[in-house]
Image 1 (cartoon, rainbow, N blue to C red):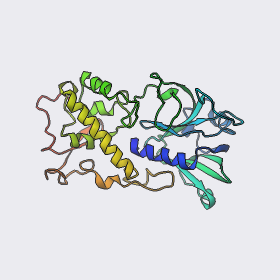
Image 2 (cartoon, rainbow, N blue to C red):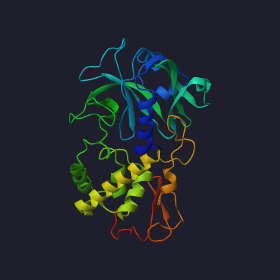
Image 3 (cartoon, rainbow, N blue to C red):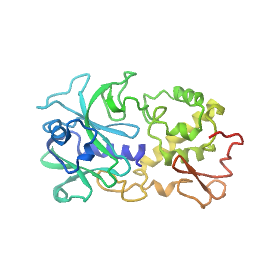
Image 4 (spheres, one colour):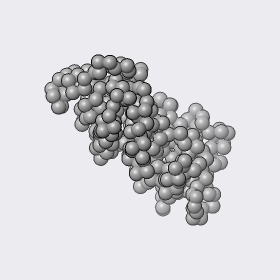
Length: 313
């Protein structure tokens, strides 16, 4: 599943290639891909045509495009009242096509927005092989803390379905001390806490494993046994690894994650433990092991990340 660096890479591409465009037409090829939108394909199209994409914003793995009012005009405070929200799920892609590429239609194309961007039309395609992702037009609501909704948003609003999602580690409005306190107050394993999007958003299986390896902590370490410095070290490691992944365009293991131009990210070549079962740990040389974890996998170095003796998780 795309995690924060992958979604941020897509958001950045939308800023450069789609933001500012006015929706000319909308084609829904699979109703299931707009299943969260009330009213179906007709209502989805009706709420988009004629509206300008005024920004591309992200909080954790949630991505949204605030919509200007029909007929254009400057957006005044407190900003747009609605946005098109995208959740990429396991395999969702937002691809920008122009020129000769306008005739390209993936066999997994689910929704196409035709945009007027500059002199030539541009298509914004939602492609989703496994169909777990979805698009919807949703109301924007004020952020509980009054700060910007997320990366790329000049507005203190967030989509209503994502209001419960915590800020992420790349968000300048994040209160990191509060996150440290919240983690230590939990009675769970540290990896479960990192994956809890209500505590801190955007961290998934890949970057949780990489952060814990960098911090030298086992995924089963109980959060209420962590010192504040250890909890902060894990968060700092998660931010560090995600920024490094972002610089390389994210992590791609197959063609299911690409940026808006269809290119893969290359951070998979830099992973220390995730997916490296049986390979030597880059730090000590011990062979990386894989354990089953929450119907997924966890990868650890048995030497650098000792399992806690009294680990409850």
